[in-house]
Length: 420
Image 1 (cartoon, one colour):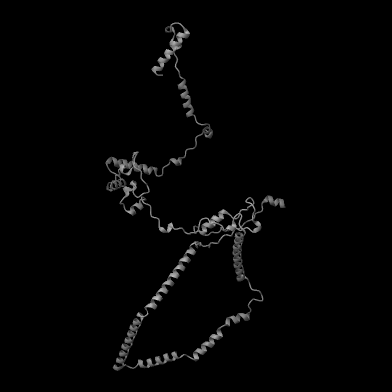
Image 2 (spheres, helix red, strand yellow):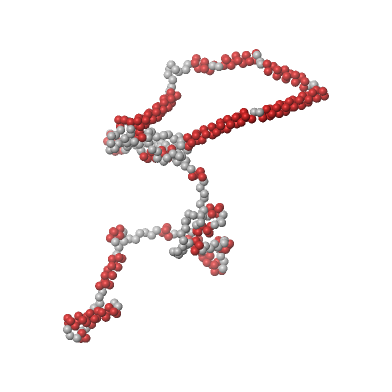
Protein backbone atom coordinates (compact mmCIF):
# COMPACT_ATOMS: atom_id res chain seq x y z
CA UNK A 1 0.00 0.00 0.00
CA UNK A 2 1.12 3.51 -0.68
CA UNK A 3 1.65 6.15 2.03
CA UNK A 4 -1.42 8.09 0.94
CA UNK A 5 -3.65 5.04 1.30
CA UNK A 6 -2.21 4.32 4.76
CA UNK A 7 -3.01 7.91 5.92
CA UNK A 8 -6.54 7.66 4.58
CA UNK A 9 -7.05 4.35 6.39
CA UNK A 10 -5.79 5.92 9.64
CA UNK A 11 -8.17 8.83 9.23
CA UNK A 12 -11.15 6.51 8.68
CA UNK A 13 -10.17 4.42 11.68
CA UNK A 14 -9.82 7.50 13.88
CA UNK A 15 -13.25 8.79 12.97
CA UNK A 16 -14.78 5.35 13.43
CA UNK A 17 -13.06 4.99 16.85
CA UNK A 18 -14.29 8.31 18.08
CA UNK A 19 -17.86 7.58 17.09
CA UNK A 20 -18.18 3.91 18.05
CA UNK A 21 -15.62 3.02 20.69
CA UNK A 22 -15.46 6.16 22.76
CA UNK A 23 -12.50 7.19 24.83
CA UNK A 24 -9.07 8.37 23.70
CA UNK A 25 -7.54 6.49 20.77
CA UNK A 26 -4.02 6.86 22.09
CA UNK A 27 -4.77 4.20 24.70
CA UNK A 28 -5.90 1.63 22.06
CA UNK A 29 -3.34 -0.77 20.55
CA UNK A 30 -2.38 -0.45 16.90
CA UNK A 31 -3.70 -3.95 15.98
CA UNK A 32 -7.23 -2.91 17.00
CA UNK A 33 -7.07 0.40 15.13
CA UNK A 34 -5.36 -0.53 11.80
CA UNK A 35 -5.75 -3.36 9.25
CA UNK A 36 -4.24 -4.12 5.83
CA UNK A 37 -6.68 -4.52 2.90
CA UNK A 38 -5.44 -7.59 0.91
CA UNK A 39 -8.60 -8.30 -1.11
CA UNK A 40 -7.16 -6.91 -4.39
CA UNK A 41 -3.92 -8.83 -4.02
CA UNK A 42 -5.77 -12.09 -3.29
CA UNK A 43 -8.01 -11.64 -6.32
CA UNK A 44 -5.01 -10.94 -8.52
CA UNK A 45 -3.22 -14.05 -7.23
CA UNK A 46 -6.32 -16.18 -7.86
CA UNK A 47 -6.61 -14.85 -11.41
CA UNK A 48 -2.94 -15.53 -12.13
CA UNK A 49 -3.29 -19.01 -10.70
CA UNK A 50 -6.33 -19.65 -12.92
CA UNK A 51 -4.39 -18.47 -15.98
CA UNK A 52 -1.45 -20.75 -15.22
CA UNK A 53 -3.68 -23.73 -14.55
CA UNK A 54 -3.92 -26.06 -17.59
CA UNK A 55 -7.26 -26.77 -19.23
CA UNK A 56 -9.26 -29.85 -18.40
CA UNK A 57 -8.90 -31.24 -21.94
CA UNK A 58 -5.12 -30.92 -21.72
CA UNK A 59 -5.14 -32.82 -18.44
CA UNK A 60 -7.20 -35.60 -20.05
CA UNK A 61 -4.85 -35.87 -23.00
CA UNK A 62 -1.75 -36.10 -20.84
CA UNK A 63 -0.26 -39.59 -20.53
CA UNK A 64 -1.17 -41.49 -17.36
CA UNK A 65 2.10 -43.37 -17.16
CA UNK A 66 4.80 -41.79 -15.05
CA UNK A 67 7.51 -43.84 -16.73
CA UNK A 68 9.49 -41.60 -19.15
CA UNK A 69 9.78 -42.75 -22.78
CA UNK A 70 12.99 -44.51 -23.77
CA UNK A 71 15.72 -42.26 -25.05
CA UNK A 72 16.36 -42.46 -28.78
CA UNK A 73 20.09 -43.00 -28.93
CA UNK A 74 20.24 -42.84 -32.70
CA UNK A 75 18.77 -39.33 -32.68
CA UNK A 76 21.72 -38.03 -30.66
CA UNK A 77 24.39 -39.79 -32.68
CA UNK A 78 26.35 -37.80 -35.24
CA UNK A 79 27.94 -39.61 -38.18
CA UNK A 80 31.75 -39.38 -38.16
CA UNK A 81 31.66 -37.61 -34.80
CA UNK A 82 35.20 -38.61 -33.81
CA UNK A 83 36.60 -37.56 -37.16
CA UNK A 84 34.85 -34.17 -37.03
CA UNK A 85 35.98 -33.63 -33.43
CA UNK A 86 39.60 -34.30 -34.37
CA UNK A 87 39.31 -31.97 -37.33
CA UNK A 88 37.93 -29.16 -35.15
CA UNK A 89 40.75 -29.63 -32.66
CA UNK A 90 43.26 -29.47 -35.51
CA UNK A 91 41.68 -26.25 -36.81
CA UNK A 92 41.88 -24.71 -33.35
CA UNK A 93 45.60 -25.52 -33.11
CA UNK A 94 46.20 -24.09 -36.59
CA UNK A 95 44.20 -20.95 -35.73
CA UNK A 96 46.39 -20.42 -32.64
CA UNK A 97 49.48 -20.57 -34.89
CA UNK A 98 47.87 -18.16 -37.37
CA UNK A 99 47.17 -20.73 -40.09
CA UNK A 100 43.81 -21.00 -41.86
CA UNK A 101 42.48 -24.16 -43.55
CA UNK A 102 42.61 -24.20 -47.33
CA UNK A 103 38.81 -24.26 -47.74
CA UNK A 104 38.37 -21.21 -45.50
CA UNK A 105 41.25 -19.40 -47.20
CA UNK A 106 39.77 -19.89 -50.69
CA UNK A 107 36.40 -18.66 -49.46
CA UNK A 108 37.92 -15.46 -48.06
CA UNK A 109 39.80 -14.85 -51.32
CA UNK A 110 36.58 -15.17 -53.31
CA UNK A 111 34.77 -12.78 -50.98
CA UNK A 112 37.61 -10.23 -51.32
CA UNK A 113 37.62 -10.46 -55.12
CA UNK A 114 33.83 -10.19 -55.43
CA UNK A 115 32.63 -6.56 -55.76
CA UNK A 116 30.59 -5.41 -52.81
CA UNK A 117 27.17 -4.24 -53.98
CA UNK A 118 25.62 -1.80 -51.53
CA UNK A 119 21.98 -1.05 -51.96
CA UNK A 120 20.54 1.98 -50.31
CA UNK A 121 17.44 1.18 -48.29
CA UNK A 122 15.94 4.56 -49.15
CA UNK A 123 16.25 3.89 -52.89
CA UNK A 124 14.84 0.39 -52.74
CA UNK A 125 12.10 1.39 -50.35
CA UNK A 126 13.01 -1.26 -47.81
CA UNK A 127 12.90 -0.66 -44.10
CA UNK A 128 10.33 0.50 -41.63
CA UNK A 129 9.88 3.98 -43.06
CA UNK A 130 6.08 4.52 -43.30
CA UNK A 131 6.46 7.39 -45.76
CA UNK A 132 8.13 5.23 -48.44
CA UNK A 133 6.40 5.09 -51.81
CA UNK A 134 4.53 2.04 -53.12
CA UNK A 135 5.70 0.09 -56.16
CA UNK A 136 4.60 -2.88 -58.25
CA UNK A 137 6.72 -5.97 -57.61
CA UNK A 138 5.88 -7.36 -61.07
CA UNK A 139 6.86 -4.23 -63.01
CA UNK A 140 10.17 -3.82 -64.86
CA UNK A 141 11.03 -0.76 -62.74
CA UNK A 142 10.99 -2.71 -59.51
CA UNK A 143 13.58 -1.17 -57.11
CA UNK A 144 14.36 -4.61 -55.69
CA UNK A 145 15.73 -5.70 -59.07
CA UNK A 146 18.07 -2.70 -59.47
CA UNK A 147 20.93 -4.64 -57.89
CA UNK A 148 20.62 -7.25 -60.66
CA UNK A 149 20.49 -4.72 -63.50
CA UNK A 150 23.19 -5.20 -66.13
CA UNK A 151 24.00 -8.77 -65.11
CA UNK A 152 24.49 -11.54 -67.64
CA UNK A 153 21.32 -13.46 -68.58
CA UNK A 154 23.01 -16.84 -68.24
CA UNK A 155 24.36 -15.87 -64.80
CA UNK A 156 20.89 -14.82 -63.62
CA UNK A 157 19.34 -18.07 -64.91
CA UNK A 158 21.99 -20.23 -63.24
CA UNK A 159 21.69 -18.38 -59.93
CA UNK A 160 17.87 -18.64 -60.13
CA UNK A 161 17.48 -14.87 -60.04
CA UNK A 162 15.71 -14.93 -63.38
CA UNK A 163 13.29 -17.69 -64.44
CA UNK A 164 13.92 -19.51 -67.69
CA UNK A 165 11.70 -18.26 -70.50
CA UNK A 166 8.93 -20.69 -71.30
CA UNK A 167 8.98 -21.87 -74.93
CA UNK A 168 6.12 -20.90 -77.21
CA UNK A 169 5.16 -24.51 -77.92
CA UNK A 170 4.23 -25.01 -74.27
CA UNK A 171 1.82 -22.06 -74.39
CA UNK A 172 -0.34 -23.79 -77.00
CA UNK A 173 -3.00 -26.23 -75.92
CA UNK A 174 -2.59 -29.80 -77.18
CA UNK A 175 -6.20 -29.70 -78.39
CA UNK A 176 -8.76 -26.98 -79.06
CA UNK A 177 -11.64 -29.11 -77.80
CA UNK A 178 -13.49 -27.79 -74.73
CA UNK A 179 -12.90 -29.47 -71.40
CA UNK A 180 -16.62 -30.19 -70.97
CA UNK A 181 -18.55 -30.95 -74.13
CA UNK A 182 -22.25 -30.14 -74.11
CA UNK A 183 -24.41 -33.12 -75.02
CA UNK A 184 -26.93 -32.86 -77.85
CA UNK A 185 -30.45 -31.63 -76.95
CA UNK A 186 -31.81 -35.17 -77.33
CA UNK A 187 -29.94 -36.33 -74.23
CA UNK A 188 -31.47 -33.75 -71.89
CA UNK A 189 -34.01 -34.38 -69.12
CA UNK A 190 -37.14 -33.52 -71.12
CA UNK A 191 -36.12 -33.49 -74.83
CA UNK A 192 -38.32 -32.66 -77.75
CA UNK A 193 -39.44 -35.42 -80.10
CA UNK A 194 -37.28 -34.26 -83.03
CA UNK A 195 -34.07 -33.88 -80.99
CA UNK A 196 -34.58 -37.27 -79.30
CA UNK A 197 -35.17 -39.00 -82.65
CA UNK A 198 -32.02 -37.35 -84.06
CA UNK A 199 -30.00 -38.69 -81.12
CA UNK A 200 -31.47 -42.17 -81.62
CA UNK A 201 -30.56 -42.03 -85.34
CA UNK A 202 -27.00 -41.07 -84.48
CA UNK A 203 -26.70 -43.96 -82.01
CA UNK A 204 -28.25 -46.32 -84.60
CA UNK A 205 -25.64 -45.32 -87.23
CA UNK A 206 -22.81 -45.97 -84.77
CA UNK A 207 -24.24 -49.39 -83.90
CA UNK A 208 -24.70 -50.32 -87.60
CA UNK A 209 -21.12 -49.34 -88.36
CA UNK A 210 -19.85 -51.46 -85.47
CA UNK A 211 -21.98 -54.42 -86.58
CA UNK A 212 -20.63 -54.19 -90.15
CA UNK A 213 -17.06 -54.24 -88.86
CA UNK A 214 -17.81 -57.36 -86.77
CA UNK A 215 -19.46 -59.12 -89.75
CA UNK A 216 -16.49 -58.31 -91.98
CA UNK A 217 -14.11 -59.75 -89.42
CA UNK A 218 -16.24 -62.88 -89.12
CA UNK A 219 -16.27 -63.32 -92.92
CA UNK A 220 -12.50 -63.02 -93.05
CA UNK A 221 -11.97 -65.51 -90.26
CA UNK A 222 -14.77 -67.86 -91.20
CA UNK A 223 -13.62 -71.31 -92.38
CA UNK A 224 -15.10 -72.32 -95.81
CA UNK A 225 -17.69 -75.06 -96.03
CA UNK A 226 -17.23 -78.41 -97.81
CA UNK A 227 -18.83 -77.08 -101.00
CA UNK A 228 -16.68 -73.94 -101.00
CA UNK A 229 -13.47 -75.71 -100.00
CA UNK A 230 -10.81 -75.80 -102.78
CA UNK A 231 -10.03 -79.12 -104.49
CA UNK A 232 -6.79 -80.33 -106.08
CA UNK A 233 -8.06 -79.47 -109.56
CA UNK A 234 -8.94 -75.88 -108.66
CA UNK A 235 -5.63 -75.41 -106.88
CA UNK A 236 -3.75 -76.68 -109.98
CA UNK A 237 -5.71 -74.30 -112.23
CA UNK A 238 -4.91 -71.33 -110.04
CA UNK A 239 -1.22 -72.22 -110.08
CA UNK A 240 -1.13 -72.62 -113.89
CA UNK A 241 -3.21 -69.54 -114.58
CA UNK A 242 -1.37 -67.03 -116.82
CA UNK A 243 1.63 -69.24 -117.63
CA UNK A 244 0.47 -70.39 -121.13
CA UNK A 245 -0.38 -66.87 -122.32
CA UNK A 246 3.03 -65.51 -121.29
CA UNK A 247 4.80 -68.30 -123.21
CA UNK A 248 2.82 -67.58 -126.41
CA UNK A 249 3.52 -63.86 -126.18
CA UNK A 250 7.24 -64.47 -125.76
CA UNK A 251 7.34 -66.76 -128.86
CA UNK A 252 5.56 -64.16 -131.03
CA UNK A 253 7.96 -61.48 -129.87
CA UNK A 254 10.95 -63.59 -130.84
CA UNK A 255 9.55 -64.35 -134.32
CA UNK A 256 8.65 -60.78 -135.34
CA UNK A 257 11.15 -58.25 -133.96
CA UNK A 258 10.34 -54.56 -134.51
CA UNK A 259 11.97 -52.41 -137.14
CA UNK A 260 13.87 -50.11 -134.80
CA UNK A 261 15.58 -53.16 -133.32
CA UNK A 262 16.70 -54.26 -136.84
CA UNK A 263 18.08 -50.81 -137.57
CA UNK A 264 20.00 -50.82 -134.32
CA UNK A 265 21.49 -54.20 -135.20
CA UNK A 266 22.59 -52.94 -138.65
CA UNK A 267 24.21 -49.85 -137.13
CA UNK A 268 26.03 -52.00 -134.58
CA UNK A 269 27.42 -54.20 -137.38
CA UNK A 270 28.59 -51.21 -139.43
CA UNK A 271 30.28 -49.60 -136.42
CA UNK A 272 32.01 -52.88 -135.62
CA UNK A 273 33.26 -53.20 -139.20
CA UNK A 274 34.45 -49.61 -139.30
CA UNK A 275 36.13 -49.86 -135.90
CA UNK A 276 39.05 -51.80 -137.29
CA UNK A 277 39.72 -49.29 -140.14
CA UNK A 278 41.60 -45.99 -139.62
CA UNK A 279 39.75 -42.76 -140.53
CA UNK A 280 41.22 -40.45 -143.14
CA UNK A 281 41.80 -36.72 -142.76
CA UNK A 282 38.89 -35.96 -145.08
CA UNK A 283 36.45 -38.06 -143.03
CA UNK A 284 37.52 -36.31 -139.82
CA UNK A 285 36.99 -32.87 -141.41
CA UNK A 286 33.51 -33.91 -142.59
CA UNK A 287 32.59 -35.15 -139.13
CA UNK A 288 33.90 -31.95 -137.54
CA UNK A 289 31.95 -29.81 -140.00
CA UNK A 290 28.80 -31.86 -139.38
CA UNK A 291 29.14 -31.37 -135.62
CA UNK A 292 29.59 -27.62 -136.06
CA UNK A 293 26.55 -27.36 -138.33
CA UNK A 294 24.47 -29.40 -135.90
CA UNK A 295 25.48 -27.17 -132.97
CA UNK A 296 24.72 -24.07 -135.07
CA UNK A 297 21.27 -25.42 -135.91
CA UNK A 298 20.57 -26.14 -132.27
CA UNK A 299 21.60 -22.58 -131.28
CA UNK A 300 19.48 -21.01 -134.00
CA UNK A 301 16.51 -23.12 -132.99
CA UNK A 302 16.88 -22.06 -129.34
CA UNK A 303 17.09 -18.39 -130.41
CA UNK A 304 13.93 -18.75 -132.49
CA UNK A 305 12.13 -20.33 -129.54
CA UNK A 306 13.18 -17.48 -127.26
CA UNK A 307 12.01 -14.99 -129.85
CA UNK A 308 8.68 -16.73 -130.11
CA UNK A 309 8.26 -16.78 -126.32
CA UNK A 310 8.06 -12.99 -126.38
CA UNK A 311 4.80 -13.30 -128.29
CA UNK A 312 3.57 -15.92 -125.78
CA UNK A 313 3.76 -13.69 -122.70
CA UNK A 314 -0.01 -13.52 -122.38
CA UNK A 315 -0.42 -17.28 -122.42
CA UNK A 316 2.54 -17.67 -120.00
CA UNK A 317 0.92 -15.22 -117.60
CA UNK A 318 -2.31 -17.23 -117.73
CA UNK A 319 -0.34 -20.41 -117.01
CA UNK A 320 1.41 -18.74 -114.04
CA UNK A 321 -1.91 -17.52 -112.66
CA UNK A 322 -3.42 -20.98 -113.01
CA UNK A 323 -0.36 -22.48 -111.33
CA UNK A 324 -0.58 -19.98 -108.44
CA UNK A 325 -4.32 -20.64 -108.08
CA UNK A 326 -3.64 -24.38 -107.95
CA UNK A 327 -0.95 -23.85 -105.29
CA UNK A 328 -3.32 -21.66 -103.26
CA UNK A 329 -6.08 -24.30 -103.54
CA UNK A 330 -3.70 -27.02 -102.33
CA UNK A 331 -2.56 -24.80 -99.47
CA UNK A 332 -6.15 -24.16 -98.39
CA UNK A 333 -6.87 -27.88 -98.54
CA UNK A 334 -3.84 -28.60 -96.37
CA UNK A 335 -4.87 -25.95 -93.84
CA UNK A 336 -8.44 -27.27 -93.73
CA UNK A 337 -7.13 -30.80 -93.26
CA UNK A 338 -4.76 -29.62 -90.53
CA UNK A 339 -7.58 -27.81 -88.72
CA UNK A 340 -9.85 -30.82 -89.00
CA UNK A 341 -7.15 -33.11 -87.59
CA UNK A 342 -6.22 -30.64 -84.84
CA UNK A 343 -9.41 -31.48 -82.93
CA UNK A 344 -8.99 -35.21 -83.41
CA UNK A 345 -7.17 -37.29 -80.78
CA UNK A 346 -3.59 -38.12 -81.74
CA UNK A 347 -1.76 -41.39 -81.42
CA UNK A 348 0.20 -40.91 -78.21
CA UNK A 349 0.80 -44.50 -77.21
CA UNK A 350 0.38 -48.12 -78.19
CA UNK A 351 -3.41 -48.00 -78.13
CA UNK A 352 -5.72 -45.99 -80.34
CA UNK A 353 -8.40 -43.73 -78.91
CA UNK A 354 -11.92 -45.13 -79.10
CA UNK A 355 -15.03 -43.04 -78.51
CA UNK A 356 -17.08 -44.12 -75.49
CA UNK A 357 -20.55 -45.58 -75.87
CA UNK A 358 -23.25 -42.98 -76.31
CA UNK A 359 -25.64 -42.69 -73.37
CA UNK A 360 -29.09 -42.93 -74.93
CA UNK A 361 -32.49 -43.64 -73.44
CA UNK A 362 -35.21 -45.18 -75.54
CA UNK A 363 -38.58 -43.53 -75.93
CA UNK A 364 -40.10 -45.95 -73.41
CA UNK A 365 -37.36 -45.18 -70.87
CA UNK A 366 -37.88 -41.41 -70.80
CA UNK A 367 -38.97 -40.21 -67.35
CA UNK A 368 -41.89 -37.83 -66.98
CA UNK A 369 -40.43 -36.21 -63.85
CA UNK A 370 -37.00 -35.39 -62.50
CA UNK A 371 -37.54 -37.70 -59.53
CA UNK A 372 -37.85 -40.78 -61.75
CA UNK A 373 -34.84 -39.86 -63.90
CA UNK A 374 -32.23 -42.65 -63.96
CA UNK A 375 -28.54 -41.67 -64.05
CA UNK A 376 -26.69 -42.62 -67.22
CA UNK A 377 -22.96 -43.22 -67.56
CA UNK A 378 -20.21 -42.36 -65.10
CA UNK A 379 -18.67 -38.95 -64.40
CA UNK A 380 -15.28 -40.52 -63.67
CA UNK A 381 -15.18 -42.38 -67.01
CA UNK A 382 -16.39 -39.29 -68.84
CA UNK A 383 -13.55 -37.16 -67.41
CA UNK A 384 -11.01 -39.91 -68.11
CA UNK A 385 -12.10 -40.15 -71.75
CA UNK A 386 -12.09 -36.35 -72.05
CA UNK A 387 -8.44 -36.24 -70.98
CA UNK A 388 -7.61 -38.85 -73.62
CA UNK A 389 -9.56 -37.03 -76.32
CA UNK A 390 -7.80 -33.72 -75.56
CA UNK A 391 -4.34 -35.40 -75.89
CA UNK A 392 -3.47 -34.83 -72.25
CA UNK A 393 -2.91 -38.52 -71.47
CA UNK A 394 -2.46 -41.55 -73.70
CA UNK A 395 -5.29 -44.08 -74.13
CA UNK A 396 -5.04 -46.88 -71.59
CA UNK A 397 -6.69 -50.18 -70.84
CA UNK A 398 -7.21 -52.13 -67.66
CA UNK A 399 -4.21 -54.28 -66.75
CA UNK A 400 -4.88 -57.98 -67.21
CA UNK A 401 -4.26 -60.18 -64.22
CA UNK A 402 -1.74 -62.88 -65.01
CA UNK A 403 -1.16 -65.54 -62.39
CA UNK A 404 2.49 -66.23 -61.78
CA UNK A 405 2.05 -69.58 -60.07
CA UNK A 406 -0.73 -72.06 -60.69
CA UNK A 407 -3.29 -72.67 -57.97
CA UNK A 408 -2.58 -75.50 -55.62
CA UNK A 409 -5.52 -77.15 -53.85
CA UNK A 410 -4.86 -78.70 -50.45
CA UNK A 411 -7.39 -80.80 -48.57
CA UNK A 412 -7.24 -80.00 -44.87
CA UNK A 413 -7.34 -82.68 -42.21
CA UNK A 414 -10.58 -81.44 -40.63
CA UNK A 415 -12.40 -81.51 -43.98
CA UNK A 416 -11.02 -84.98 -44.71
CA UNK A 417 -12.35 -86.32 -41.40
CA UNK A 418 -15.83 -84.99 -42.16
CA UNK A 419 -15.92 -86.46 -45.67
CA UNK A 420 -14.65 -89.84 -44.51
